[in-house]
Structure formats: structure tokens, C-alpha cells
Length: 143
Length: 143
DNA sequence: TACCAAATTGTAATAATTACAAAATAGGAT
DNA sequence: ATCCTATTTTGTAATTATTACAATTTGGTA
Ligand SMILES: [Mn+2]
Ligand SMILES: [Mn+2]
Ligand SMILES: [Zn+2]
Ligand SMILES: [Zn+2]
Image (tube, rainbow over all chains, first blue to last red; front, side, top):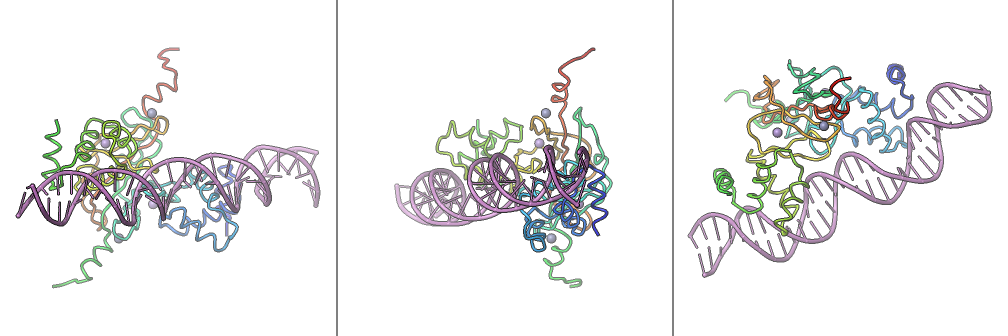
């Protein structure tokens, strides 16, 4: 059940703890780019002793080890992503969803730019998602 | 002195007020992508009656009118930019500077992506800036 | 010049994150 | 298997950015 997450932590020489395993599993099973509160309140149900601070701490160490990445697209809170390769993100200003955008981008894997050493690249799009546009138009397809 | 900012506001049918003019001037003269606190504390010196809330409100209406844009690169606070064309940004994790990056990007002026309507595109790079790398190496040029 | 919708101001409330110290525990040594 | 200790977890308090709100002021217009 948790073997792959145990391995992931061991491979990075990070201590294997329940909160870390649970957080990894949650992110692996919810590709919705959740915020800390969403992760915390969801895990809290099955693990009542979990502390919010632990979620912050755990995500921080996972981030340092590049197992997860944080997304600053919303501007008010960090969103987390268990990363599967470089990709861009879209934030819907109507429903709040954050969606993965997989498009070619020559700057995505850049390691140096203008003489600066680049460790991280983030590409953000914001607007109204396909789904919200449909709703807006009342689902009409003709007329 | 303030004519161009007056015109800018009038062109957008926004009321011309002192705080708005001062904020525009400040952003025009400081391309450092300041946060609200920096704008507020700087303007407060010459305009003691200025309220922090007014800075928030003013930036909000300027943003709605696309006169300024907010940058979410830091993750902890919004940074503001009086925009001169689309460009990317670089955040130095050492000195905190946010620098303009002008590189070609096929996605920068995208208006639709994956069926989603795109209103805004942000490209962020994070790492260590050229300057901080020099300092790190102790300015040595030989040996 | 008088009016009023909109803007400004100050303060209080909220939300996200960080600081910190005490208790618990993972993993290596015995 | 037990012990040891550095690391982690936990709970609470503090901090920081932002928003809510009501009273006051003011820009633009008649
Ligand atoms: Mn993603
Ligand atoms: Mn800029
Ligand atoms: Zn949507
Ligand atoms: Zn720097």
C-alpha cells in the first residue's frame, strides 16, 4: 500500500513517518493541487492526531527534496503538486480549479537565463475554464 | 508632472485621486516589483494621511483596468508591476530581487489553451541571480 | 456652489504561515 | 530486544498579508 512512498522517502534519505506517507499518498491520489488546509482536513479524519504544522513541515521537506512542488498561482495560498515532469498550470477565476497544461515550452527546462541560475520554472495561465464557459452559456449547443 | 497619470486614469474612466496618481508615479519610477508595504511606507512619508487600505483598493482598481499587474511569484505577498508589454520574471532566492526577463515565449500572448479562455499569462523563473553568484564566489576573477 | 456616488481612512476581522517548546518517535548503536 | 538521540510531531502563540466594514471625505457633475 505505502511501499512506493516508503521507497521514495528512503531514496531521498528522509525519515519514513506516517504523516509523510499519508501526505504523499494524498497528493498522489488527488491531482487537484490542494492547499495545506485541504490536505490537513482530509487526513485529519483518519489521523486525528495530525497537526497542521506537521503538514507544513512535511511539505517543506518534500519540497526541498523536489518530491513535490509548490504552486504560487493563486496568490493567496500555496498549492501542492506531486510532480510528474515539468508542466504549466491554468487557474480558473470562476470555479477556482487549477488544471495541468501540457504544452511545449522552450523555457520550461531552462537552467540559466540572462546569467541567472534557474532552479525552478513556473508557467501560469489564468482565465475561465472550458467547463465554466459551458455553464455560462447554459449548455446550449444550437440556437 | 502628473499629467501622464491623469491621462491614464481618464482614458480608463477611473476617478483621478491623489493616492492613485502617487501609486502610479511610484510604480513608474520603481521597476522593482514592490509589494504593498513598500509602496505604502514610501508614499506615507510625503502623504501622511495615506491609508494602507487605500493602497490595496487603488492597486485593485488599477489591476481591473489592466494598468498594473500583480505578480504571485513570491508566494507570500503580491508584487506589483506597471506593465510595459508582456514579459517573464525571475525571483532570486538569495537577495529577493524580482527581475524582468524578456525572452521569446510562444505561450505569452495565448488567448485560449486547451479550450480554456486565457486572460493572463505569467512566466516565472526562480534561482540565484547573476549578482548573488558573483558575491558567492568572492568577486575572484583569477586563481 | 451644491450634491452624491465613489473613494479614502482607520480599525477590526480573517486567513495563511511561521516560531517555538514540549512530547513522541525513527532508526542506528549496543 | 533495548537504548539513545537527533529528528519529527504536536499544540499553541505570534506574525504577516489581506479583507471587511462603517464613518468621513472628495471628485466630478449639474
Ligand atoms: Mn500540476
Ligand atoms: Mn516586470
Ligand atoms: Zn472553472
Ligand atoms: Zn540575488
